[in-house]
Structure formats: structure tokens, C-alpha cells
Image (tube, rainbow, N blue to C red; front, side):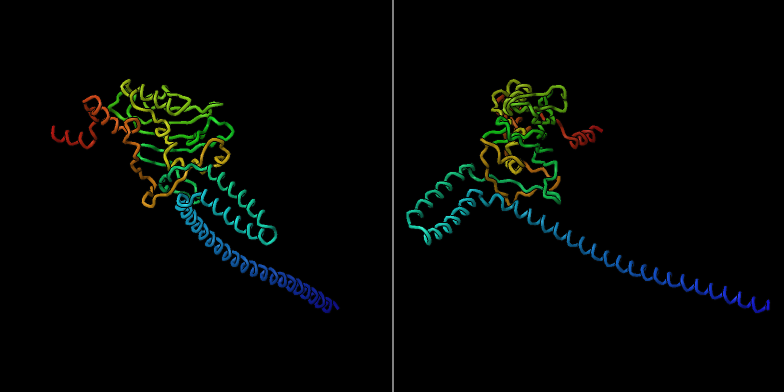
Amino acid sequence: MSQVYDNYYNDYHKNAEMQQNLKYKKKYRKLKRIVKDTVFENAALCDQVAQMQENLMLMKEERLFLLRKLCQQQGEIDPGTMMVRSQSNNLNSSSFNSECSTPKKTVKKRISMDASETKVKPKRYNKTARRAVNLIPLDVNGRPIFPISLGDLTVYSLGEVVSDRIAYHTEDLIFPVGYCSTRIYASLRDVRTKSLYTCKILDGGSKPRFEIVSDNDLDQALVGSTPDECHSRLLTAISPALRSITPRGADFFGVSHPTIQNLIQSSPGTRKLIAYKQQRFEVGKNHVIERGASPMVEEEADPGLGFAALHKHYALSNSYRIKEEPSDHDLLALQDLLS
């Protein structure tokens, strides 16, 4: 009797263990199926992400290409002309509809009204010839890469356009707050040596504050309410003989340079300026500035802007020539000769 009970007990435990193993085996198969599906789904998502990244790179390159084409065509397309063309197209369509529905007298009135509008709106743009600008390096988002080197002039920041104060712009120029540039010119201590001047436009309340600081005399800031006043003080501080030079403060700061003025004019808030007239620019096909390049500027021939031109001016007006400092190559050659 005891043997029968033992057999029954052993069979019961074996069946219970087998059922438990079958239960865990089913769970294992279920988890294995879930993991397998997850792996396939993850692989599909990775492929989709890679495809989206590739499409994103292509779209960025296409956008950068279109932006460059837009910059090239910006100067060739006159906004005033485009406005007149669009209004003329609207005029033709409106006149055609009016002929079908109203008498000819109303058509004449409509034409006269549209013609007056086309005459008024282009007055916003300056009638001067288009000014050539240089192509500058742009980042992925289409913004200019700073600093921008233009000969002796280097621009580090364009600042922000102030549209609610009329003194911060004129008919031809804009003076953005925070604008910062540097220019190489004669030193305040020795006219024969070069010095780096930092030009800034600061917020002076009702009027902008123009400031020129030399790297040799950081404590001696030349301040003025206009760029010409600031430039005139610099020329007088260098030498009283330079008072005869006509100040060109906007050129010294760089805000009148076509490339820089085009960037400032494209900044937000310029459409709200009351007195400023939009300038017309065109991109020179052969005027491309690579990053790190420093093309020569025509304004540097002016003695008030260029260091070399200042020396020539002294040689012509005072009948003597200011000696330039010898270069490192000349000093090394002189040392070799002496040794």
C-alpha cells in the first residue's frame, strides 16, 4: 500500500513540474517573439532615420544653393521695378474684369488710380545707380560669417537697427546700435607706425554715440554724435596738419561700404525707418570673398582712411616722405649682412 502511494506521489510531482516547465516555455517563446519583432522594428526605424537624415542634408544643401542664387539675383532685380510689374499685371486683370461688367469711364478712373500708386511707391527707393557688393561666406542658416574682412576694415558685428528714433538713420545711412568694426590707421603716438582702431556705435539716448578707440590708448576714447565728428577728432589727435582732410566718418566706420550697408539694410526693422531710402545693390560676379581673404578697398586711397595713402598725402603736401618701419624680412637681411 505504501509503495502505491509513493508511486502516486512521484507521478503527481512529475506532472506538476512538467506543467510548470510548459508554462515557462510558453512565456519564453512569447518573449522571444516580442524581442524578435522589436529587433526588426528597431532596424526599420534606423533605416528610416538614416533616410530622413540623408534627405535633410540634401534639403540643407539645396536651401544654401538657393540662398546663394538669391543673393546673386538680389542686386539684379530692382524691388521698385518688381512692384510696378506686379501692379501693372493687377491693372490689366482688373481693367479686363471692369470692361466686362462696367462702362469704360470707370476703367479710366481705375487706371488713373493705379497709375498714381505706381508713381508713389517707387519713390521709396533711391534713384542712384546700383552699387556693387561682394559675396561673403555664409553659414548653413544663410547668415554671414564674422568677422568680415574688407581690406583694412574688419566688421565683427552689425548690431541692431533702431527704428523708433529718427537720429539713428539718415536718408542714405543706418546707424545700428551694437555695430563694431576695426580699421588699421596711423597711430596716435607715432604717425609712422600702424595702429588698430575699434569703431563702435552705442546707444546714446536720443542720438547715437560714435566711439573710436586705439589699441595703444584704450583710455583715450574719441567720442562724437556723428561719424564725421568722431573721424575729425581722430585726424586732429593724430596731427594738426590733418585738419585739411575732409572727414569721412561713415567710411571709416564701414557703415557706408556697399557690402556692409547691404547687410544692414537686410536686417529686421529697416522697413520702419522714416527717412531712410532703400539702396539698390547688385552682386559682382567676380567679387567673391573667401573666408580669411582681405580684398583691397578703393576708399583706402583716401588719406583719411588708408595708412599708405596717408604717407603719400604727406609726401605730396609737405614735400617730405614719412619713413615706414622696416619689415621683419628686411631686419633679418640686415642682420645677415652685419654678421
